[in-house]
Image (tube, rainbow, N blue to C red; front, side):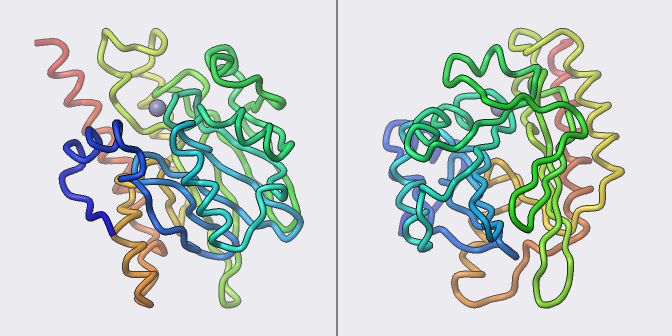
Length: 258
Ligand SMILES: [Zn+2]
């Protein structure tokens, strides 16, 4: 299997040869599965009454995601909803392909709908506090502007060995849009900090990243696939991650004002 080394070197290669980012799909916890690539996470939630896909990814990696879905024994036709955390190409480009293939309804934060239109026409616009219920799963969305204006984060509970765990994700962590020349919208830095503070109030037992390097999805997957411990269960890394996001933003602001 392809070994991931320094992230940016590899990402350069992967941009040209998307198959280099192929990862083995695996179950994270409860009904939550990883079917994404090294470039961009894609999660599948088996609700017992259909599947919810979160962040379909690039069009050029859709065949890898599809292969992962089949490898886990699922059928794409069972996907009922496709959630897009924000409008960027690496998360939302394949939304149209997957909704065409499955008939699933697409969701995105209301303030990202206009820019998402370059890749797909959203069926459902998500507002702060909205929920999506399917089968045994109820996903709660929080509007967390900053990385983009309409970024949505999400939280839901899963069961594993008689215990309930809160799964959570921050929908847009990248500070690449915090550089003045790349602002998604005016005031994005202030909104990003406010979103981080809101997120700190959430309890998260299982943090899932929408990029694999946010939570070392790859390293943890190797351990799980080898029959090792489930390092995704960790109620500390959520806050550590948010603190790290804030540090990165402060660095960007400092460098940008030089
Ligand atoms: Zn993004």
